[in-house]
Image (cartoon, rainbow, N blue to C red; front, side, top):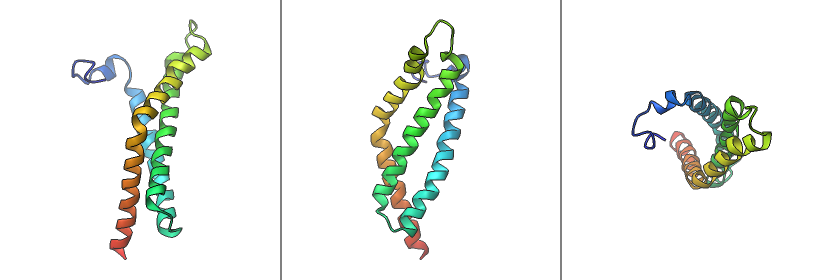
Length: 127
């Protein structure tokens, strides 16, 4: 988005998009905190495969964040009187969710597996 706006970060303010970004960051870090605890428990206590656990929670963080952040735009702009519910749902929830999943699935899985490995490695160092 910054490149499309000519390299300026003012697009967030000009297009009133800063609230979506802040909400997305809060949701993302909140889920990462919760899922990180669960991943640590599954990897360290239950002795599950760290790559599978990491990939699972990386994927869950991505899909839940993508879905919830879409609702921010839907509530802000999608409920205009000239749009139908389904048009707004498609524009503000389905399309962003689809593209975030298409572009983000592989990085989310890889980073999740990497974090799972870090949890396992940190536990081995501390023991």
